[in-house]
Amino acid sequence: MCSILAVLNLKGDVLPLRRQAVRLSRLQQHRGPDWSGVYADPHAVLVHERLAIVDVLHGAQPLRNADGTHVLAVNGEIYNHRALRQALRTPYAFQTDSDCEVILALYRDHGADLVGMLNGIFAFVLYDAARQRYLVGRDPIGVMPLYMGSDAAGNTYVASEMKALVPVCDAIREFPPGHVLDSTEGELRRYYAPAWRDYEVVAGDSEGPTPGVAQTGSAVATPAGASAGAAPMGDASAQIRTALRAAVQRQLMSDVPYGVLLSGGLDSSIIAATAKSFVDRRVEEDGRAPAWWPRLHTFSIGLEGSPDLAAAREVAQHIDSVHHEFHFTVEEGIDALEDVVYHLETYDVTTIRAAVPMYLMARRIRA
Image (tube, rainbow, N blue to C red; front, side, top):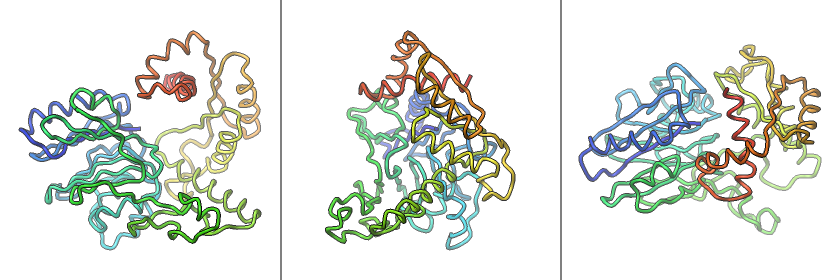
């Protein structure tokens, strides 16, 4: 989890706007405590707060191409970055081992259509200084947050959290998942349009658009094991299993220790068990090398006597994970509400109720 903040279409002196951007970005620094980076020229300012996960030593942002004309600030993980590197049309001078740097290489070859080639979770701003062009993109289902706004002078702002835009923007809107904004086009474009978005196609009443191809014609990554049409139940079960295992495996990509949040319910138990099957080999090297941390750690939290805690213990024992159990009181949950609402940026009761124990557990894990 990192954060990005960009000021685009600059309407004034870059120096005060740069200082302002750095100040606003600090409001998101809880997302990226490891490093802060800034790029500024007379037309754009990009600020990045980094949480280091891949290429810890050299992956600081904003990322740049070799001649410094293409600049990228991204909050995300690109799971298929190695395959994308290998498929490049011509050699590219990578400056780091960051999974996100492949976005710059894809921009060179494909322009805005690069977003349909990414398998991952992401929110980014890419600035082309040579053409004074920028792209803003967000992952297909909106795992990574992203917002846009503008100030009275007409400067355009992009940020990971609304709190960074509130001090300066007259209006703030969410950047929609599965879309890209190309400044040369001036409008949002949906790049992710799988067949299952169309009820008639799913019901078998219409052929609809080709699965895995965006409405604009750019390629969209189809999940491993997915099929274009309906399949017999046995085949569908096998496809789901294959797709699930592939999804879990690619998300274990990390150069730092990781764990699984385990509630004892069906979803987290299946994910934990699947992760356990991959934990002894490094995903980053296609399983060719032993893992740096060959034991899976699982974490659970609940009120004293919670049945979820008992279920999580049972699952952890079954899969032989290193299990960590935390408890909290009702009073501690109430005390956390203000911080939870601040970070979630919502008053939705259901979301807050689910987030309170997650927030408390995250603090305990970090400690």
